[in-house]
Amino acid sequence: MKTAAVVIFEGFEEVEAVAPVDILRRAGVCVKLVAVGDRLQVCGRSSITVCADALFSEIAESEFDAAVLVGGPGVRAAASDARLIEFFARHFRAGKITAAICAAPGALCRAGVFSGARVTAHPSAMPEISNADIDERADVVRDGNAVTSRGAGTAMAFALEIASALEGAQKALEVSSSICYTPRL
Image (cartoon, rainbow, N blue to C red; front, side, top):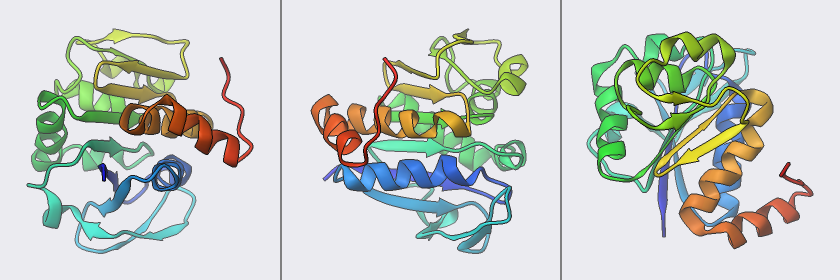
C-alpha cells in the first residue's frame, strides 16, 4: 500500500489539507495527517480544529511515497523549521511525490526544494519563486515528482493529481466519478 504524509501547522488552510487526505484515502493510500508542533490538535486559518494522526517530530525520519505541504498563513513560520524543509527536500531528491499548494510551493522553492521544476502557486507566493519555472495560469502542475497547485479553490484537482501520481490515472478517475467531481480539462 502506498503511503503519504500531509503536513499541517497552526494557521493551515483547512480545505487544502482535508481534500488530499480524503481523496488519497479513497484511492487506497495510507495517509498520515502530520502536525508540526507539540499538539495533535491544530487550528486552521478559519478556526477549524483538526486532530492529526502524528506529530512531525515522530515521523521526521520516515519515508513516504508522497509528502504534501499545505498552505495557509502559517506556512512561512512552519517552513522556517529546517527539519521540515529537509523532510521535503529528502523526499524530492529520492524521487518521491513532493506536493505543495497555495503559499507552500513558494516556501519550498525559497529553500531550494523545487529547484528547476515547473511549478504553480498562489499569486502571493510567486515572488518567492526564483529557482523554478513558474506557470501562473495552471491550477495544478505536475513536473516529474513535483505536484503544485494554486490554492483552496484548486484543492480537489490537486488531491486528484496526487492520487493519479500514486495510484494511476484510472484510480483517480474512479475516485473523481464516485464523488461527482468533474475535473477541468
